Image 1 (tube, rainbow, N blue to C red):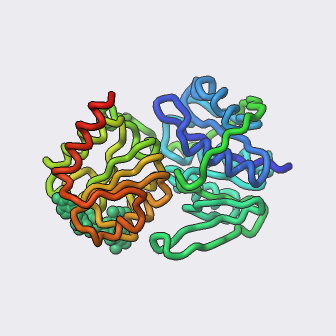
Image 2: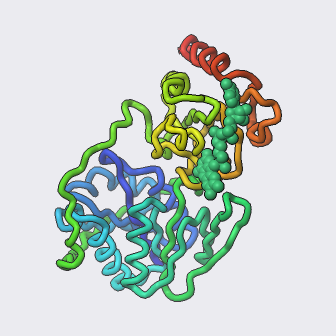
Length: 318
Ligand code: FAD
């Protein structure tokens, strides 16, 4: 069975949820092989998690040459692995870096590239959801190696233990790939809240929250459930909440166990980023708001009345 390479993503030394999803997708096409690229020691910390998630092999290229520069060295290592291992496909998370690595890899290896897939089948056919989910497109890369980026939270991870056999990759990174060095890394402060795309619970606020100060109501409710905070584009564009928390077509895709939409109308572009959430709760003062068509539970009411009561009720149950 042909191998399928999966580029591993980590956060704070731990495997990101997206990598488990990619390993599951890889298993539908062939034999999942994880590719770990990072500073020395990265692979040791995540090897057992990768094996549990389904990696049969773990290719490792570590050190400053890989981790000390922007995306170019990573594309070089992957290109080398593609020529040595002839995989059926390479799966990469649809992050900003992931898409740039995938583009460079496609160019280096002369293969086709599909981005933002939401599913991949056994024949390597990728499903893409476009126009905010209004149309579904199925595409297949012509040629030997399909390079596909997959949107996080689109595929449910189904861990199935693999052998996790480690193989160190010897690679000489070219000078050309080392033209943009990383001089400093400053970790974004997210406080104690979970990362938006990794969270089990997301509480989002929309234009109905009405101001940046009022977002404290959303944050308090989120904190009572150890949830992440999200926002609609209208809330972000109005300056109520930072852009990196936008959920939707042009923001992040989330698929938590519970999504609570507060003061959000439910525009198609917002739904595109949250409609696969397991349970959706909406709080909106307009009983005709389209979000109620999607919600499993809805509360018609003023969020400034409803949400603080919900926060107190959650706290009282702890
Ligand atoms: P509104 O549509 O204005 O809704 C506010 C809601 O709050 C209303 O339903 C109102 O009844 C309710 N409300 C008001 N006050 C209260 C209160 N006190 N209590 C309870 N309810 C209250 N949007 C996204 O979210 N994410 C995207 O990624 C995104 N991408 C886009 C891409 C494109 C190309 C385009 C054209 C649009 C995109 N949009 C996106 C914008 C989208 O079309 C909507 O404009 C946006 O989602 C609306 O945000 P909202 O629901 O917060 O605001």
